Image 1 (cartoon, rainbow, N blue to C red):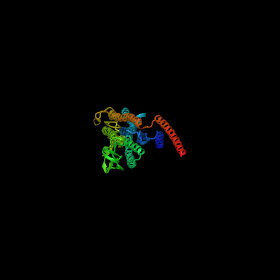
Image 2 (image 1 turned 45 degrees about the vertical axis):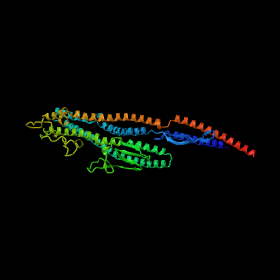
Image 3 (image 1 turned 90 degrees about the vertical axis):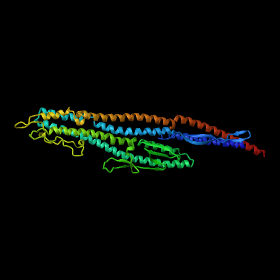
Image 4 (image 1 turned 30 degrees about the vertical axis):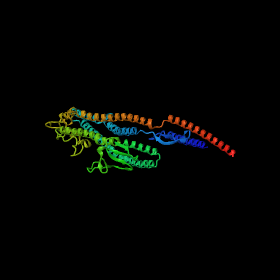
Length: 466
């Protein structure tokens, strides 16, 4: 009887274990498309055998633990690569927009406007007394000034949007770190009770991955089963506590946010992720473009005004400034505008006849020759060549971002596939496991049924013997 009851217990342990393993496999299938889910396995172990005179008698099986398939090194690599992906992605978006400003499509760009502006002085040199031709000079001047101002303004707008994006991203980071800190507490509490924390761990790792797309973080798990998340050695999350980042306006009056943590400016310490990409665009790329455009606009104003003020207009008056000079501290590209409204005031001549309007065209010719003149303040290149270097720089950096994004996507995809091969759910494998557990359960149930029948028969025989 003792052996029969032991066999009954053995069979029941098998039923319970196979049933639980079957449930786990079913849960894997149910979560095949759940982001961040790690495949679970029921790790079975033989129960301690029963010592009998003939030797050891097996007592069945138990679930030792529910194990989540996870490789910490692969997960850390995925977080690291996602930092680069987040950076290249946001840089590509912004630089593609800026590149479109300098496309000169449809003859509406700065390069085309410069060409038409200098050509209008060539036309004026051919007909210096024509009011209609002079009007075209004013139109061309307003067009080139407007094109420069518009490009400058749109880049400033893009810079402002990136600045607001920094604040938004900081808010996202703070939201994620708060959630990670709470999950730290849940993981530690659950595991302290000896219970399974896989679900909380999966959620936490998913959030750490999302955080990695936003900034250059590092993380590690401590002995208390909590992750510490840092940015350049500064703890964003430690145990159950999160330290918030802040978007702070500097005392200088600049509209650009600085990133502070516990009152310390850590802007320069953010080097990758979406936040790092936004800082690169706002503080490096766009300021460089604005400075180049401003230098060109300043040179254009100076060169044109210098020649124009040395000539005479149709009223025999000395020519003044063609473009309004920028005020002290103002951006030339932001404020460039034609100062003349009366076409008769364009100084096309350098000499005055004894009487009547000037018919000399030498000043207009000198202004037209600026198209091919090498300007010392621009590095001894022409206006067109200098502008071409700006266009090439914008295009080159936009291509670098696009190529970097393409490469980084491939790397992330490869690491993600590696992670999925370890932690992801394979429907084929799960179906094979389900069939295996099903057959084991059926066999165990059959075994219990047989033992139960034998027990009943033994009881019947013993009962009738009395």
